Picture 1 (cartoon, rainbow, N blue to C red):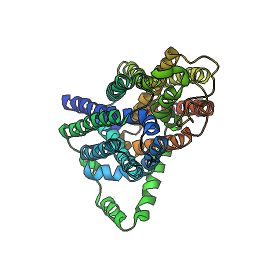
Picture 2: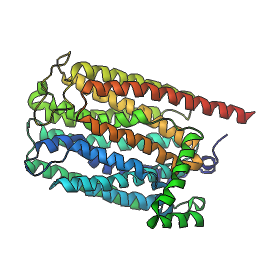
Picture 3: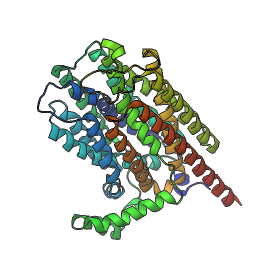
Picture 4: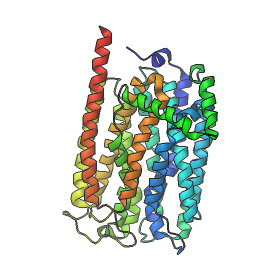
Length: 445
């Protein structure tokens, strides 16, 4: 049976406009944020400031850790003030985090990491709800692919700037850092402002009931009384029917968005080209994301068979990338701080192999994410807000853990962990999909 919410939404140019503007807004904001995450640890290592003791990995870990637990409150906040205003306010928090790197200090880095973690939970929960609101059963896959392709274009422009500015540098001077992050700040603010032109309002049935509103207000005086019902509601949504586990997606998110670029920049065999290759790697990851989003989102119809096939392809693509990285990138590339790598990999590091791995990481990630968004929008059409919140909760917990161990665990062990959880996650996706197919067959009879 077609979910009620999606079946009641008819095609409208205004909804298509909303999806495009939503994607453009995220394109600008994440041009700034993904570029920041890609270069953050490298920038921290090059700071000419004896008083700064922060870590880019720890900052990103804090972001995703706070992000995960903020998802407990995010659905209620989005329901109260609406997805449009929520995304605007969250975008301002993203801009504040980018601004810190213009004149960095340890306390401001970690403080804004907490703020952006809260903002990220609100932003992604609102995005999931807004995308489902503007889709129907026949367009959810198209809209997901359209949004994902626009979002992943964010991997291109900022990283291209990094390549041209950093190519040939062995250290990052303060002047270059300031100009880079000032440009990223302007880009993030433009993306935030674009949310103000979104059309349409919230549905009346999605507004908080009087009882829920009183419960939300009571958090000011007794946060624990409110959190327990919220946890139970999110848990019920996750288990009935079960959510496809996004654990491996969280590890892979941290790997391609922060760890892998840092590993390339620290590889001694790349010489003076290493820092510039961070930007090129980010661009190629983005190309892989865009190709995957277009191929598996826009060109595929809403078919359960294709969802499982695409997820299986994503697993295979990632396993190939992990193997190539294992044999061609030094295993200590993820843990060195002020020096370059000392170990020698099985194969001599090659720029072409490193960039091929970047493409495969992006392609595999888009395989997983487009299909996860598609099945969430299909199965949880009437509970989109808590469903996307619990999805991001699990994903961000594992991303936070991965960022914290990213600077301490050798590269080969990080790759092995992603292989194990990637295989388990793919099996679980198949189980969830088969369960939904079985339930749909029963309803037909």
